[in-house]
Image (cartoon, rainbow, N blue to C red; front, side):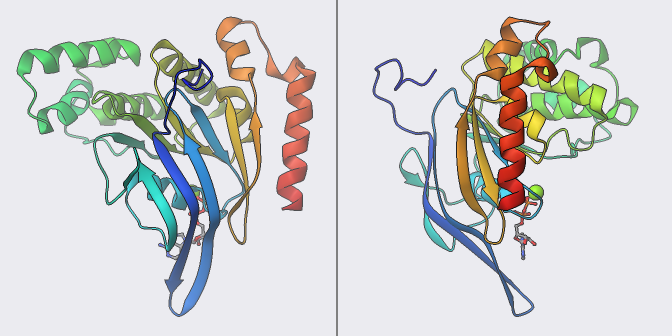
Length: 265
Ligand code: ADP
Ligand code: MG
C-alpha cells in the first residue's frame, strides 16, 4: 500500500515528467521514448510491459542513470538523476556474476566495495542467502550454478545493499518456464516480506499480471505509455498458494485487453 493511501503524505521516490529520448546513430534518428510521465512510490511493484523495441530498456537506463533524457526531467527525491548510484539496484536478463567467486563472495562483493565491517558483511550475507534460498550453495562457484540460481545470486547481490528501488530488465527472460515460475514466486516474496520497491520490465503479459500491482503498457514507434492497470493478482497469489491464474476469468479478460492494446498500438 502506498503511504498516500494510508493518509500519510508521500513523495515519489522516482519521478519522470514528459521524458523523451532520441537516439542518433549513423545519421538515423530513433524516437525511443516520447513524453513519458511516471511516479514511483515506496512499496510499489511496478511493471513496464510492451513489445520489443518500445523503449522499455531505455526507460530503465534513464532511471538507473546510465543515459540522459533528450527532454523532460528524471528526478530521484526531487534531485536530478545525474548517474548511477547505490540507491538503485539493477538486475539484467543475464546475471553478470564473477565466475571466479563463490556464491557467498559474489553476494558480499557489493558490501566489500562499500567497506562494511567484516561482521556486518557476514551477517547480511547469511540473511540474504536465506532470502534467496541458496544457503546450501554458498561455496559453489557461479559456473556450477543453473540459470535460475545465477539470477537469484544477481538478485541477492543487488538487494544486499538495501537499495531504495530495484530495477530489473527482463530478469527471467532467459529461463525455462518452470524456473521462471519459481523465480516469480521468489520475487513476490522478496517484495512482500519487506516494504521493498520493485520496477520490472517484461514483454510477458502473464508475468506482468501475476507479479505486480501496477502495469504500465507501452506501445512503440514512438515508445509511449498507452494504458495503466492497477491489478491485485499478485496479492491473490501471495495469500492463496493454490490460486491458479489460468482459471481466473478476470485475469483472462485483462490479458485479452492488453493483447488487443499492444496489437493496435
Ligand atoms: P525494448 O527494451 O523495449 O526492446 P529499447 O529501449 O532497447 O526497447 O529500444 C527502443 C528503441 O531505441 C529501439 O528502436 C532501439 O533500436 C533504439 N535504441 C536503443 N538504444 C539505442 C542506442 N544506444 N542507439 C541507437 N538506438 C537505440
Ligand atoms: Mg529491452
